[in-house]
Image 1 (cartoon, rainbow, N blue to C red):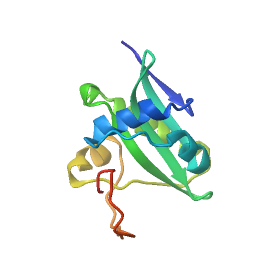
Image 2 (image 1 turned 90 degrees about the vertical axis):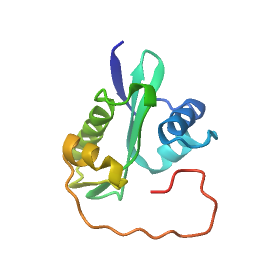
Image 3 (image 1 turned 45 degrees about the vertical axis):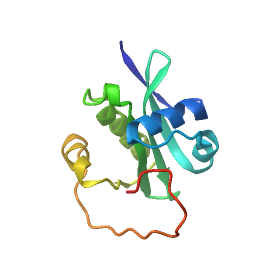
Image 4 (image 1 turned 135 degrees about the horizontal axis):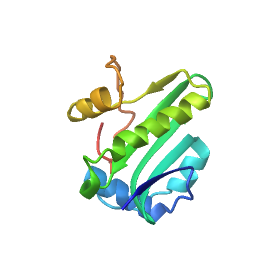
Length: 141
């Protein structure tokens, strides 16, 4: 079946939470995705196979020249088919069209090949600070 890529699609919290849980191997809790995206995201893109959400990415930004790629997720049964790379390409175009000059992404070492080779990012040094002892339900960076 053909995959369609839809920017700013109407978000169903349940289906996006399930996709996120499957992609990251995390517990499935329904999160308020629609509210978060409308409040904080420059854009978001869904990959759909028919009506099924099979991939997702969001772009947050500082309102200026910096955008941030977050939550890139592809259903495990559909990975390694170019869906994630296409989602990142669509997100990159959207950030560029919005006037952003930089697109940042953080990723685990095992995803370096995807982001650096498949998507064209270059490695940079960055820092990470955990802000509290709150139990995490999302996978740690």
